[in-house]
Length: 76
Image (cartoon, rainbow, N blue to C red; front, top):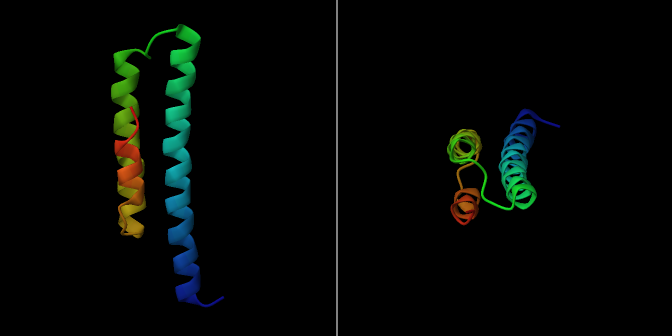
C-alpha cells in the first residue's frame, strides 16, 4: 500500500468512526427516551449536540462531503 492509499484509508476510517460516534449518541438518546417515557434531560440533549458537532468537524476535516451533515440534521 502506497502513502496516498494509506492516507485515503485513514480518511475513510476517521469518517466512519465519526459516523459510528454520532449514531451511538442518537441510540443513547433514543434508549433514554424509551426507558424514561419522556425525552432525555435538556442538558444531555445540548451536550450530545456539541459532541455531534465535534465528530462532524473531525469527519469533514479529512473528507469533504456533506452526507453526514445532512443525515445529522435529520436527527431529532
